[in-house]
Image 1 (cartoon, rainbow, N blue to C red):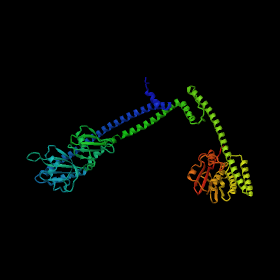
Image 2: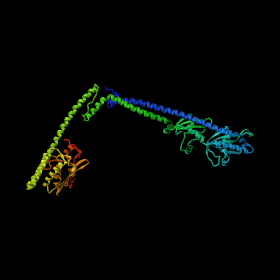
Image 3: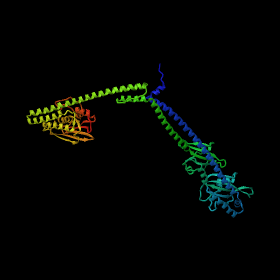
Length: 598
């Protein structure tokens, strides 16, 4: 029968510790609650701000429409007062233009123009050709057929008392082409035989200053603006009207004219716009306020940023709270796990874990403390045994070197004795005696570099006597390094190898140079010969362990290298540089500051 898998157990099994399980579960609950409340609050705030902003913009645009209606009413009152004046009747429709009526009309025009900066032109025009415009000083356009002007024909032939045009270019004054909105009213000839027939027109050309001021006062946000459409959807006023005509900016007029809603959205993303619409029954105009949705929701975005900051703060608090709960529950177990990990890595110097509880965890902790103490004792015992073994191995290596040197030296004495060189035999034997006396009398395994150099000097003296026609030597050691400790019998075997493998086979007399100096906080000893050198293959295998051959040098670089690295570390020891036919340089590097522990 197949065992049923518990999904909860599988999920919890992915965590590495009980503390992480408790921390994860409490954190998920708290963070989930904070996240849900934050998302709901952000959505509610966004919706509320958008609805309130839409309602506010609709109220503003309706108020602006009412103000425009009031403004047009005021202009219609001016047109009515002027057009119904008896002086207008007398001047336009009398048998002859009355000069006094003309003066009074011009004075009235001057008063209106001086008091209203938003009125660009005003005047009266009769079908009989009589007209007065502004101060009557500027010439009218002789090429203009007044009957081609819609504002004129609508007022003259229409049934309404007044007509309001859309924005257009006014051509009536010679040399001027301003964009205006024209309010025109037909003037009836009261003395007409037909009876009150319209035989003249009064007009007022309005610039955009008053309408622009009304629209600017009603702007919503820094980037909002208002514009006006007539009944046919033509632009009456727009703050960027020139850009519209140059197609640098567009408005979705068909959407505005085709909707029966008070608000409509257009666009997507950051360019989404909200159109708030108000239609005037008096003028037939549609007043539109346009504002970017992003601008409307600026306060909402600020509120949402505040919500996010508060939510992040609450989440941090929730994480700390979860951490505190999980840690307080699992701290004894965690301490035990941490100590076990350190023991697993080989650190048995951990302090005893103190657990006050008397439950299973307390019992387990006490057993763990006893176990670590026992293991630490066994480790220390093993270290002492390994240290003793290492010292024995080093002494064995050193004892391997001493007989070999003695053998080679005695061999040289025998060779000179056979050659009847009695004085040289006496001198070499005396030098060997002094050298052995120095070596045997010093039981320390570590000597100073100065002592090691003196050993080497004695050895070189003996070898020079043996190979007096084959070699010369020089010793140039900086006095500043003579006090530095060095394990015994390192320099002499390297010199011996240089003689036997480099200078011995050189046809001419060779030179062996011993140098000593400090470099990068290290003490450096160099044995330089100008012998036959080594090829790449010999140089590659120079550090390999070879069987002792007492007929040659009796000890290889391997033993010296091993002793140096055992004492000082693998980064120190001997390095070789050699060129076939040119010579070899052996460089011994040891730390300049050291505390050698045997």
